[in-house]
Length: 461
Image 1: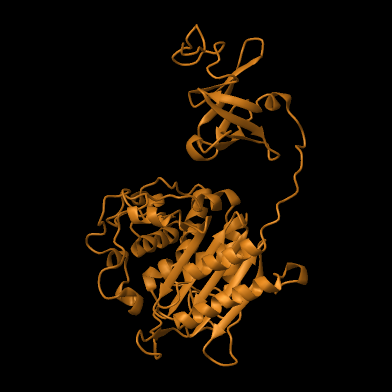
Image 2 (image 1 turned 45 degrees about the vertical axis):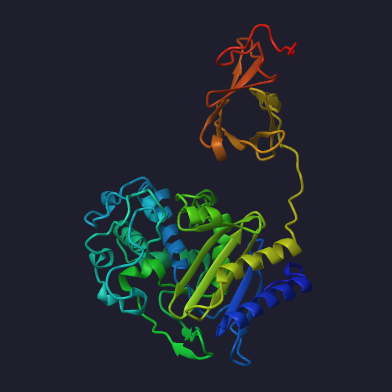
């Protein structure tokens, strides 16, 4: 699977194997398979199993549950990028008559639409999808439990609705659209809506005895976009690489980055846990690093995909048991092990290809009131503004091509940065969303809002 120069160091490989061995043994999983991705390539695969001489490899399918939601979210983002919908559109505009039409597409993606967590009726994960043939069967008579847009409330029916939206706008079944627009372009040939050999069987492990019970493998029907898929660690490794960098055949890097950004108001407990949700992706802070991805579970199976973009490391962990090992913790640990043992080697520093004197003039020290900031011109043709001491508001800015700039992140995201000049062209100050940045604290030569005392700075005596 990897060439010698791509392989991890022996100590790293042993630490990874130890971690999954501990998870399989303590979690009492019939089998557990894992893959680590670095630099967009799978660099390690490991597995543990209760069956002697039969360890699952990276091509054995497991059911991945709610990781399916991320695939559905990608399909919706493709519709947005093609101009067929806007994330701010109410559902009713494209899919009328659901009873949840006031919720926007973005709110459905972020689980803030106020919908119930589960569908009414019998436990949908262990009963045939034929019991819920229509959207009305999935949503029930009162789909909304909470005010739309006010809180994050995870919703399987919400992603069922998004799957129906994909079908409506594409004029084809969700499964067919998924195969054509994601699975085939990314080469995910071992990902499918129904199990394909070789695949693991789903088991329940008795909580108080080392005994097994087979779980039913139901087709979810209408609810397939929320959790139907089967996949392998090999395929999900490729999907993780896509979520890190994008792929113009499916979804560009900027849209994938948008999916990774927080999009849901966090519950109080989530704030304490450092967790939130993006557009089809779970986001958490763990071990000092930002992780994105998704977990999944259905009776008989557990799944997790964890990605650290900053470290350029991802992990996929799959197990065939209803409960047991905490795969989110395992995935985070696999990422941490590689990131700490073999930290990412940064790209070489390179100077700017061209130096624009008008842009270079913006660089250096600026003051917002009495707070000192530094403005740098970076090799990727951006401006980077940040406080010179301590923490504070910082952002990068992209040129608009007309001498003005737009903030890309943080407090200044979307805010305009405008260099202000005298009639003779001399730079006097920066206007950042109405904030005046001057070369000296409260420069008396600049029209600072509120004015500057004409007697200037003074002592106390």
